[in-house]
Length: 456
Image 1 (tube, one colour):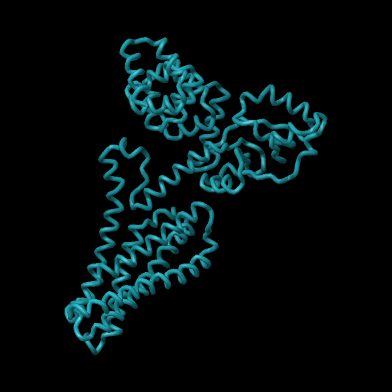
Image 2 (tube, rainbow, N blue to C red):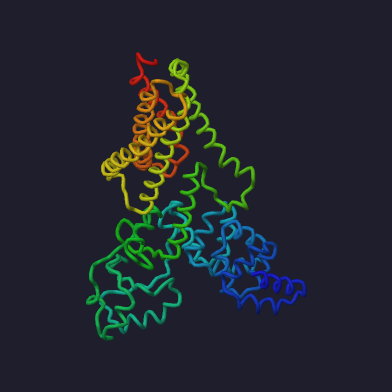
């Protein structure tokens, strides 16, 4: 990469545009993208210099802040070329990120047909499948034979996003079936399309959430899926490259939320420091206020702590164990939901598993906690003559706290999903804060139960 950057810098210094164009056009698309990352001030120059097809292919894989920065510095002619040549789904994705006035100006560069198409695609909700679809596909009638289909592909295939799959439509554009191209190529030319139809059709609704489409692609091993409206009329297709992009964005967003922050809409190193703080401060304030209840809980049991100071030694152990088990369960369930392995309807199965696993994990930590206290009695009398009661209190409290943490961590994402919220907002820090407070109540309640009348 360093050698490539040095060569480009030399050509830029020499102002040798012909050599620069030849050099850039011979690079891989991904190499040009890296060059724009390395030399951001020359990004617009690279896009201007590239042939239009390569310029479009580079532009479509850039992140949005880079796209926005470059489009503002391109000549009007190049802007028009790129906007017109961008595939409809990529164009829609770009437009959806821009402010309304910027979209209005850019749409003027489109032909009347493309302008109508862009406005139609932008009419769908931001996170819907409709925003991902492209109208560039091959559709045929079931009465056609293979010869006619192949002629149709030769004529219109170059404008299609993919020809891996051919779509069969009926009257008024109603989707009847989809057929893989290999099935068409392997049969006699006179074979009718109706003979190849098997009725095993998988389609997406234009108003479906994009997250649902990710799971459909994952489960069905398709390179493209048709998109239909409420009347099953074929509107467009969604290809796997767009789904992979969305899946990456969803994963990144979920990881950021699980970490206890709002999702960043720009790369970490590019986002303004004040916006970064703004994204993080809200959750920190909420978690801070939540942790204040920990002090309230400790204040409620202040008398017990004064009488049995040794109980305070194990407070960090108790609350961290509960928080850790809750964070584990929350992360596992959020990931399972994102992969489509768990649904809200299966909450009872999840609860049963977490009851059992939480109990086993709690017993494991409880036994270790008791053995720790038992072992220390051979070297110190810090726990006094009633060390056994202290050990039982800590051991049983750990069982209760870890069990509760597992249940809370697993049920909270499902509850949020049921209420229509994003499960990822039940982040590890949030679950840990919740379990910290309740963990203290469990701990001191067990202590009162075991030590009432003896030490308390």
